[in-house]
Length: 502
Image (cartoon, rainbow, N blue to C red; front, side):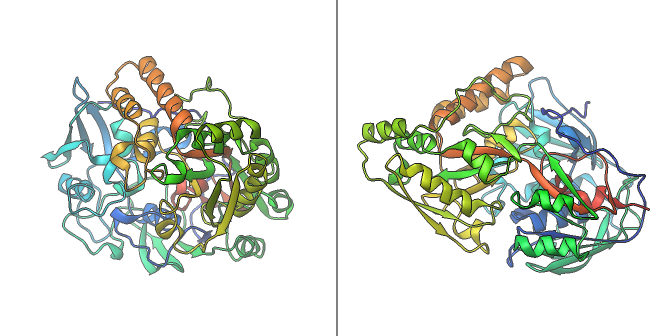
């Protein structure tokens, strides 16, 4: 068996600042949360829950810096010859917080939470290809797929795939195998965890306790860091990042990764059913001005497809969409559309600066005869009430562990109704995605992923002008090693990986 590496390139990495030390209370602030948050693995959608779940629980596989798959509760894994069965060896000697030993049955039960007609899991589309999950031994699990998938193990590193005790549905107790034990949990406000004295993972979970504070306002988060009320925050405001970096006792962490900011069009809405209209919207945005004025240069130009250079199968040969109002006008005329009015729903929750980006986009698009009506929405409830439910809306994707996970989650037919935000259903794309999963030859699989990106670039409902760098800020007393590039704050695992300098 082989604990194979995920496809991905190394990010910009921050080097270790000191030798790990134990102790102290680590206080961090998140901006992405909801008062309806739950510790149910099926419904984790917000950063607050992601950070807290990783403090309390583990997956079978962890994503390390550079996108490498690291054994976590699974020690090793491997497929059969045709890539339709994957067998996982489960780590021995691991206990849940309440003393129960981890077994294969816990793994089977946890993964089955996301399967079947009755599941409420937001990740159910990722597991639709599974036909059977069996415990083939006390510490062994076999997963059978309906078709081959060379990249299947990476899916089991996703936040929803955390392992919980079998048959225990009291999820808000926070029982898991993780480095910290839940003390206080107030959705939309804060959480407090304390160190698990029996944590199985060596060299991790350095803090005595961790507090997560929910602070939506960027100015309030920044002030809290500057005044020492918190020790770390993500999603730094790009317009003030330079000033924050110069502030005494503050470190700014800039990480290049898979994050893209933009706007999604629902292709089933009458406004955007015509692909020429969608392409017109892509020619109506000035990406260079967006990068300069909204991102203050903290990022790079994107091209309306979701796989950045941080993915091994990034397609560099796609023609770059450039700002061309006249071409946008021509496409709208071809589609029989004139005087187009587009309601664009945004809040600051998807990304800091989303409102300003939308307003700048509206100015740019006016030269193409497109009137963008920017509608600012409340941050609270944005993901449940606005995202996917309006003709056009702000969106943010931090990327996923490999190409298949990203493309399946956001663009595949099986994800319509969950994370396929534009309800896009393209037969050629779906067929290519299935073909990529079953291709053993890495070079051939890469070629198929290039074609997947081309189809999205040409036809899908995504306007993604920029790849945005992750911008985190910490107190200078915080130490860390190499920074992961899949999520902000070290892959959302800063609570387990970081420490205080001596």
